[in-house]
Amino acid sequence: MAEKMKVIDVDVHNEQNDSDLLPYLAEPWRSRVAATGIGYSGSGYYSPVGVMKKDAIPPGGGKAGSDPDLMIKQLLEGYNVEYCILTGVVYNISTTHDADYAAVICSAYNDYLAAEWLGKHKAFKGALAVATQDPYLAAREIDRMGGHPDFVEVMISSAARAPLGQRQFHPIYEAAERNGLPIALHPGAEGGGGSTAPTAAGYPSRYIEWHTCLSQMFMAHLVSMVCEGVFEKFPRLKVVLTEGGIAWLPHLMWRLDKNYKALRSTVPWLKKMPSQYIREHCYLTTQPIEEPDNPQHLIDLFNMIDAENMILYSSDYPHWDFDSPDMILRRLKPEAKRKIFYENAKSLYNL
Image (cartoon, rainbow, N blue to C red):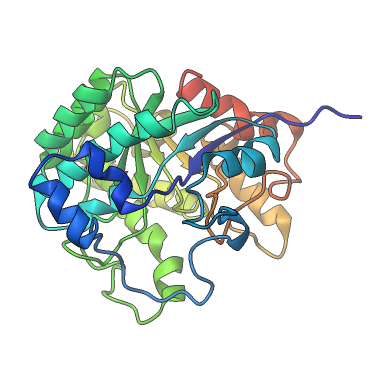
């Protein structure tokens, strides 16, 4: 019998009740959360299938993804997952208007994650949550917790008030590079609170439109990061574009390279073709994987972007669009599968 493939899952959403953060909050924040909850400003779009897998709800009740033991049984043991990156959902606090409150919630969550999850299993690794409203507070939090051995990246929301390459956000990237941590972007609250509209055309009417167009945010943020010189200024920084799709990347790199040839004087700090920065500094995650009727089309697209060196496996457990590692990318060659499902993440996160 063939040995079962080892897996590293880079996007696993551990959940918690708002009250779980109370022991890690000082006043006046503790009383606020106790009275009203954390108060995320979500996207506001209705999903008829909900958000969570029903079988991920703990036997004793509670939120799906809130029980470490059930996660260990279902995900780690069920799919031979050697490590998983716990990404939570607290990054959505970046859509709220109060920068101080957002920073405090992220700090409380990071303390909670370290105390309540990271020691439960050797496979659990954490994404350090920071809010983008005040990048200096975010940088301070990265320096506070960045030395913890089980935090392996910094998570920020792709729901933001401006393109994330702009220099106002650079203190976050400077702190991440200083602490040897990749930056990960994650969607979830686009269009909510103080974030921009969730599509380039404005606000759509339905969840299916919102969900389909999330990749637009990633396209804008990635172009901004390249053109604003983030990777020249922070040459050791790595960026993970989590849960934003993959199929859009080839045409974006082609278009950006073509425009750069005529417009390079507008970005004189760039020393390489834009696509080269993307290939050297960026990773994308598999979930939600695009699934064309002809599977060969996806393989062709992967070949265009050297996907076996840029893609990381993610399940998105326990969300409704969970991608099982034994169900996706079956047609890839074994070496490419080893890289995507295991080796790329092992190297990126120094696991």
